[in-house]
Image (cartoon, rainbow, N blue to C red):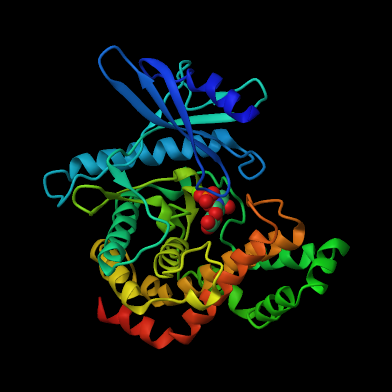
Length: 373
Ligand code: GN1
Ligand code: MG
């Protein structure tokens, strides 16, 4: 693969001691290309994560890296300051500087690459099986949001304008459907038409968080942007959450985008890639456990209004991601990476089925949110 050759040549351009011995692609992630890199020294070895930043999605990779550097520097200081009181050793990847001291390297094709320290002896999971894992996922998200909650959001750049602004995704869906090929994809699939009907019934709901923000009830804060379950690492030895990774969507936003994304990805036992809709649902026990873990950390900074919109955020982010996958399917798979025909349609079916399940469980979920405060 030509990209692997590029990755090899760029891997040696960061401040890592030793010589390159291996470069292993990591296939999770729907946007960037990721590799685990091994360098050997005379005495030992160094491993790190190398990523090609997808420029179609992240138009300004330099700004992405500036956000990542600023937030991780801040978070590392906070972690160090709290180290004596903490019930575990918290970790967060560090940006490894390039040989020229920049936070990225550019290859001969003009592609941007970054190197990040590896969170070793820890794993992330595609889906959660036990309430204990869900508690840990909640703790990890709450902890991350808490330690960056005093970082001034206005010092972060908006690297992905429109990210998680659901009404914008709806407008984009309408725009895509003006295209003849997209229309044809919709018309020839009964399943696609069923999803379109589901979307129609929820047009007004799309603006629930943005309306609250415009009314001044919710404020922009620094957020992770993509705290899905596969970005949360659990310590191999203790089973406790130890780190959150994939920090390229760190930017100003509503903490609700994060909570909704974490809950919709953690509490669906079938996972995002399931092909069996009958297995997709919002598991109430996992949700109650996640809320318990999250509020343990997040109660310190959540306002009354923040609490009020937590249920809506789970429903909304499942809906939004379903809409994004569906739109991408109709547009001809231009944004998310796919591995089979109809992949994005299937992902959309999963998220919208999950949204339906979240709607059916509203009162139980609200009770879990209220009961844990
Ligand atoms: C994308 O690339 P990855 O897997 O970290 C996407 C998220 C979605 C997620 C769904 C920048 O994240 O918003 O929730 O796929 N990231 C971007 O798996 O669009
Ligand atoms: Mg991501």
